Structure formats: structure tokens, C-alpha cells
Amino acid sequence: MNEFTSLPSPFAAETDADLGARAARMIWDDQPGVDDLIDPRTPEFAKAVVTGLADALVSSPGALKRMMRGAAAAAEDLNVEPFQGLTEVIQNADDLRASEVRFAFRDTAAGRKLLIVHNGQTVACQHVLGMALCRL
Image (tube, rainbow, N blue to C red; front, side):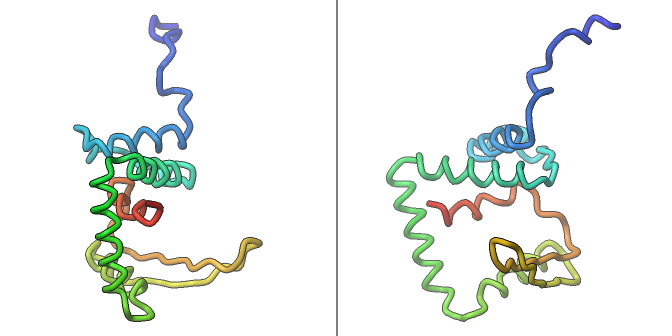
């Protein structure tokens, strides 16, 4: 046994949810190393990142919240086509160099879910700040 085996690591017991909350703080604060975050791609991590960013937005100063609400309202005015959301998904996939996008429905106990996948670059936690805006 070496001398470091008995030293508790502050991160050893962190769950994916804990890591996601910490990643959200790094992203919100634009801390050094944010571009090097490793996204374990688990639902717990993803939910914690989006929730953490949404909480940061909600607790942000009034002027920032007003600006974000104004931007969201302006964006809603731009989305007048019925399938604009799907068009955005395809454009985002294209931005990530995808050559294929697939759509499917999954029936669950909670209802029908739309699943979307593409073969482009991976979307990581650093890219999801915009997803939290809908919770403002």
C-alpha cells in the first residue's frame, strides 16, 4: 500500500449528478479548463448540467434576465413555421458536420418521445447553455 491510498480524494465519491453540477458552475463562470471538461454522457450528468445552468440564469441579475427574456421572445417571433424546431436540429447537425440525421418516436409510460440522432461531432455539456434558456 502506498502513502496516497489512504488519502480521500475530494472527487472520488462524486456522482455523475455532482460532476454535472460542478460542470454547470464552470460553464456559467467561464472558468479556465471549461473546454477540457469530460462529459460522461449519462442522463444524470446531462440533467445536472442543464438544471445548474437554468438555476444560474434564474438567480442572475434582473438586467440579464430581462435581456434573456427579450431574446427568447424575439426568437419565438422568428419561429413562425410549424417545423422550425426540426429545421434547427438539422442545421445544428450540419454545423457539427453530420451527413445523416434520424428521427424516431419512442412510446413510454410518460408518453411519446421524439428521438433525434446524427452522425456528426458529439454535443457536449459545454454546448448546452442555450437549452437552459427555456427554463428561465
